[in-house]
Image 1: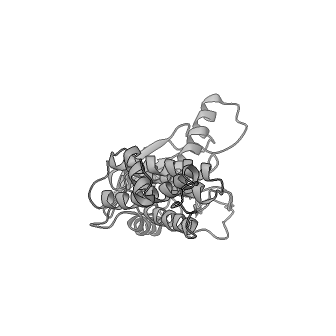
Image 2 (image 1 turned 180 degrees about the vertical axis):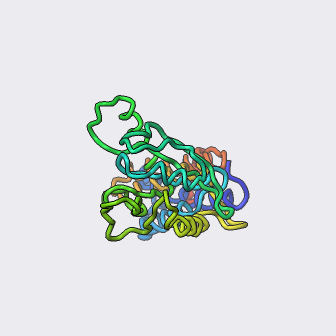
Image 3 (image 1 turned 135 degrees about the horizontal axis):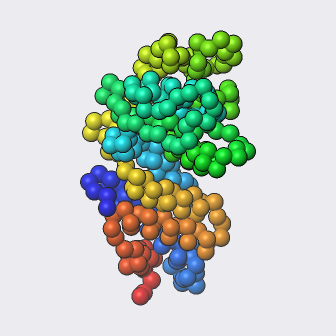
Length: 281
């Protein structure tokens, strides 16, 4: 259940959605009554404005980042130097390294604080398709799952082939015949240490920008999921002209808000409907 400032904000959003829902229900159910008009001209722009407010809240840093650390996933094809870089960042020989491709078969996670900023560095199996090794295939699937959950991906693979917004890392620059990336964010050698300090400083700066500031309200995972559900409902309602579908999408938003504040909708909905339009119960 949301508390404090978030609870007050959710109540305000909920009241606006209740009003919108009451308007839709009145048009649908009481169109023959003299005092029930069509939806106001601002109906859809009001929904869009409310959706923008939720988007702003959802873009805020999450509370999990403070407790669990920012999830930094090292990704790329086999033998790209991910495990060597992972060991350098966590300052421990946590991952097995070898010149053989496919040494890492599973996800390896280590929590580390850099200059007071909490990180969870994640080493993953090399990404490739068509492996005949069943165990390696499981590792690749898990690696792809980690990419979806990452706060940031350090991409050690071919330039331009990583996830959107990933940092291009030109690793293994000490290797003879190394094919350098044209637009790498960092050029490093985990073996010699070249470029590692710059990478750490960049990670710390990025991490601080992603963490809640002192006194700033941060959403936890459940709150974020429920606000996302409410946003989905608002977007759905705003994209529809069929009022039956609009009503259902608004109900989705109301249910999400109710779950956040631990409250039921039905009586409040009726109060909003009858009170707004003076229709006898």
